Amino acid sequence: MKWQMGRQSDNVEDQRGGGVGKAVAGGGIGTIILAIVVTLLGGDPSIILDQATNNPPVSNAPQGNKAPAPTQETKFVAAVLAQTEDVWNKQFQALGRTYQEPKLVLFSGAVQSACGVAQSSTGPFYCPSDRKVYLDTSFFRDMKTQLQSPGDFAQAYVIAHEVGHHVQNQLGILLKVNQLQRQVSKTEANQLSVRVELQADCFAGVWANQANQTKQILEPGDIEEALNAASQIGDDRLQTQAKGYVVPDSFTHGSSAQRVRWFKRGVQSGSLKQCDTFSASKI
Image (cartoon, rainbow, N blue to C red; front, side, top):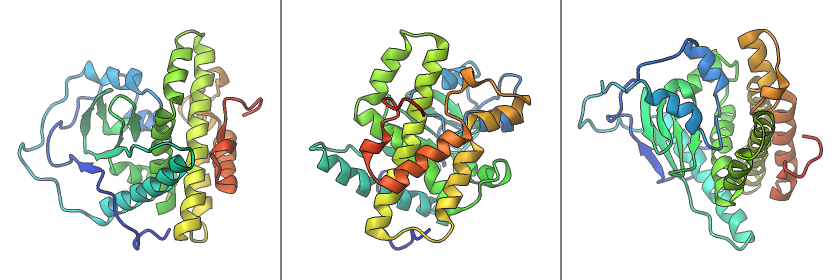
């Protein structure tokens, strides 16, 4: 992926130098499995995050330390975020609206968000309450070692997916879905969550399409990296790894095939209109 020549976003908040330290892990599920299951959590993650608040975080980071100097990894994050800003500012302008750029918070160990306390094992997530994306960059190493999803464009897809949730929030989609979820059964609420996640995948594809049109960011194999990542984090694949069987009614993010299909749809069309997962009779 060609990212070095572009600008870097000013909307990155590096909180790795202090604040909330490593939180005490709770529950009977292993950290690796937990990281896989809740990876790319979008919409309203407060249900998952609130579980962490029952185990108060321990501040083990030296107070007053400055954030570490930018590394190649953090420069990459800032560059990808800048690309999403450029794309979504233009897309919203075409809709006659103003895009409010999200902040992206880098943290290590654990972080306090407006949605609750989150540990690194939660994975990247978007909190609609404070309109921020949260990322512990150690997750990129987990992608390679635990999820078999190497490559810089696979990492960019993760960021673009979470920013996709911010786009949904800006468009009022998350609010409507959350309201509907309170009125339906758990199975129906899960189905709505799946459509939210698949739309964020599609929005990530729209970003890739538009960014490549203007900046020619794609290199051979990049799309395949993102498609592999989308496939690795499908609910059916994750449930099979964790339980040995699949429970479709409990899906919250979509199957591997669905995630791949909707990301491809965004990449191929480059159009927000093609990402209406809520009107689609078949997802």
